[in-house]
Structure formats: structure tokens, C-alpha cells
Length: 260
Image (cartoon, rainbow, N blue to C red; front, top):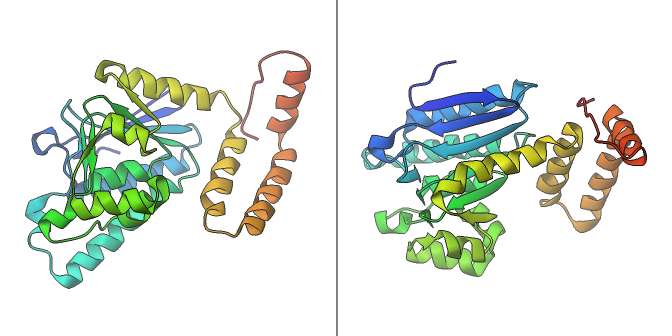
């Protein structure tokens, strides 16, 4: 479907989703959030869409944050509702059942950093900047930034970034584990696509089950996580892809997965 604030293009199993408000440094307003929710629901239901790459229009910003004009007029009730809606959309992206790669091509601040953290993997260009500067505006992160940042980089570093509101560059984000790769700006899109194609070469159901084991296992005890892993491992063993993958290995050829 057509969008006002997004561009979406599917090519050979990869859906490129671009937040397209370069005049506002791709800031998140209500329209963007609604369209992100709709777009990723479409991706979830599209069997041909196996990996998504999320980026921002232009070369200045991935998403520079929330639209301050909308933010400034929030009441306690509307602010809570806005936070809950945003959390739901980012939860949808995180639990899509398909890998989502954030190609961070500039500023990823506030809601932009939260959006990147909801993605499965993150690749940053050398000019990217990450931060949760909400305390400078008298608020706190509202799209689960207090939760995801802690899980990705540890409580101490998360608190330092949130309480100071200071931004860090791509190299520091890579050092602390906030991003998976930091690359030159002209290599960002090729690097994101190369990573997506590596994932595409593997069994679709195995990818889905691996995501489920890691995501849901994080909220379980170690023994319950092992139980979930064993159940999903067993489910893999019932798939045609498992039979094809093991047969191809024994026959020393490339596997041809069907997602069944």
C-alpha cells in the first residue's frame, strides 16, 4: 500500500523500508508510527518477504528523534497513550518472526535509537550518532529505550547514556555492543544487503525458530529457556528444510530450502 512518510520496496526476498521525512531528519510523528505499524504487519504476513532492512532518507539521519512539535503538547494521559502505542509498534518489529536489520545512516537519537534497538541487528555508518537525550527535554525514553538499552549494553552503560543524555558515535556504539558493525558511509547499504543475503541463504523456519528461542528465552529462567530451545529444535526436525539441509551437507552440495 502507498505511504506518506515511508518508502517500501521488495527485492528478492528483502524489503527495504525507508523513513522518508528528510526535511525533518526523519523525526517520528504519529503518522510515521502508524505507517511503520502497518508496513511491518504487511511484511509479517508476506511469505515472500524474508528479511527487512530499515533505514532513513538522506545522509544526515536514520531517525533524529520524536517530532518535538507533537511532543510539546502532550498531556499526562496522551503521553502515556503515545508511549504505549509506540511500544507496541516497536514490539511488533522486534517480534516479527523475520530478521530486521537497521541500517543506521546518521542520527539515531531518542525514538530513533529506540527504533534501531527494536531491530534484530544494527549496522551503523561512520557518521552515525546514538543517544537517548530525553532527560534534556524533561522526559524519559518512552518507546522501551530504558528496557532495550539495558539489555543490549548492560545497566551501567545504559544508565550513563540515559542520565547524561549524551550521544555516542558509531565506533563507541560498536565497542559497547549497541551495533553489530560500523562501516564507512558509502558501504552501509551494501553491508546491510550482504548481511541480509547471508541470512536468506539459510532455512526460513530455522531462522524463525532461532529468533523465537533467543527473544522469548531472554524472559525465561535458564532451565525454561532450555526447554523452549529443545521444543523448537524438535520442531525443526519435523521440517522438509531440515531433511534438505542435512541431505545437502552429506551430498556436498548447496541446500535448496523451501520454508517447509
